[in-house]
Figure 1: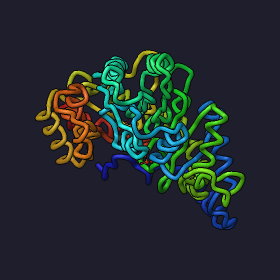
Figure 2 (figure 1 turned 135 degrees about the vertical axis):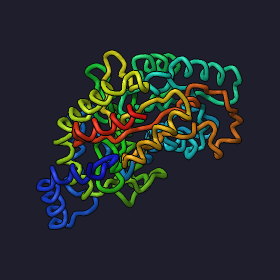
Figure 3 (figure 1 turned 90 degrees about the horizontal axis):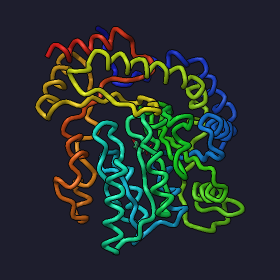
Length: 375
Ligand SMILES: Cc1ncc(COP(=O)(O)O)c(C=O)c1O
């Protein structure tokens, strides 16, 4: 068996080489490295793909999350509800604005934010009266959108701004609504390992709100007003490079085929591993982009055994994520204790992710499954 990659970007490049090389050559020839025409083309195509009215590409997914919070004026004294089981950036951006992240537990089956836990945490914040509830960051973990059918009404009733963290969500959907079109505003990441990734850092914000779009465009370039040297607010330098936009265009054109391939690969994994491990659950009426294929073991020991066996057989596997955010050292001052968010904590002790990408072969899947089934 040849070397198995967790995410085979080389196989993708071989497949799209001609188009990607042509894009890179065009950017080099044009020398319009910042805000070149490929950036606007990409934004238009991303709007068509997701069904959102506006797209503002950014330098990475973290700034794509931060900018809408800045645009809403969220800051000190505000509470922003975030799942505890996610990548750190989902909460980090809240803290960067000066607001306080309030951590919510996860659903045992989809791993996404549990709307019932959100309601409990919201009531607690209201009862304590120290923070003003302002927003929710709902993460589309591992490719499946969070349950926006329940989160949207809660946010509407309570006047909360709902930000979709679709950094891992691109390719997923809730009914006919694609990831990056859920909630009031959505942010995604084009980090190379993502389902739609560039060859460096990149991201994008999506919204249907004209005023939000105007503010995002300003925040992306140092809080510009009528032009770059007219500064009307504090902003960032958060533009996506022209080169990365050019590279993303052929990758976006190939995205649906790769997405279908990842879904078939996930199905094959699940058929062979169901009963041995808990395989991913896709909620009825939802679809996943399967940027990640994540299994749940019965406990920490079983997970360690599985990962050791994979390693010995030359198969990479990764724990996303080994520590819940409410127990991270940086959030010690918030006073959370072990046991506060039991599902999120249990997930960090039991999940592990297998190789997944749009060029994974049946032979490799079968080999990985045989290693796991022969432990
Ligand atoms: C859920 C989630 N949110 C936010 C981010 C941040 O994206 P970036 O790495 O592009 O800043 C990531 C990326 O890893 C992520 O997985």
